[in-house]
Image (cartoon, rainbow, N blue to C red; front, side):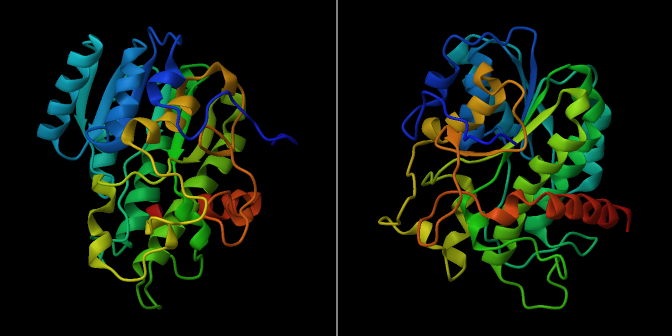
Length: 314
């Protein structure tokens, strides 16, 4: 960790295209989970515009193919591929990892679900934690060899300002003894995304793999918010006058992901949390921005890594 916050020339209004302007990703290979819509497709589009080979890892192959054709048409880069990936299904994640060959330079863990009604995987795992964290945990650790082979790979973990509403509930991660609460489950999964970046950057520094997390901002109308109307108690960030919230279009929402994935300004920096294209400061009560101290806690990051391994082994 650095003593000073990392800053860039970009801000909340910057777009993915502006962030990646002038960057050449020729011969680089990237994966974007959830790359068929929302900020995922705009992240993939920006990387493809810089001549990267981009694989859209998606649940819906038809939607993924349409997204790929759209990206190819807008960028002229024909190296846009589609592969099946259901992050809630460990067998699907294992198959994706097994089918990957060669180095991987950029992995954007973008896909996610939010505030779902109570759902569980066949193993009994709470669905938001299973999808947002465990699926990406298995994917990223499974691709460690490919990331290490890239000699300078970057992993981007898309979190949320929602992490400030709660930390990982280590005593009952899967709500087996406490009543299920959709926003508590979402918050812990987004905190887990940040803790993963902290721990993975530490464990993999010798492999020159950097991992950072981010808050993309509030992007109305994406698939992520499809369950919000089904549950009560939405955090204040869903109110139009929320203090500190960055409301963005998908191109602006993808900018911080693209910055972390591609900008030379971030060379060698890992284990940080960004928002609006700059490293976030500490969260201040009453303002929906910044990073909670518990999300950067190295002891909690190590504990989550072990809890994840234990869960997957059970």
